[in-house]
Length: 72
Image 1 (cartoon, rainbow, N blue to C red):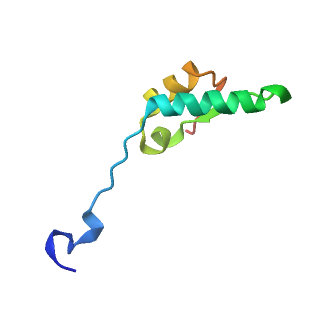
Image 2 (cartoon, rainbow, N blue to C red):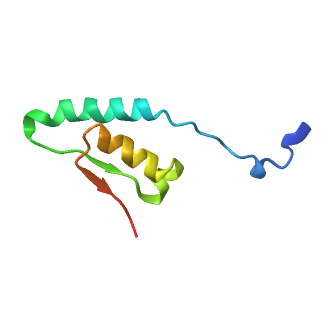
């Protein structure tokens, strides 16, 4: 390999989370399971898998997630 990526194990990935899309996904899931009476649980353990537990939890709850799954 050449250039600045010779030591590639130190290259970091970056993810941008669209909280509006997260809310839309929770709403879509709620609509899908509503006829069965099931409720939605948003799993936010491990800092919402690195995406920010508090913002992800707030977005999921605002969209109707009844439960939050965490780990200790």
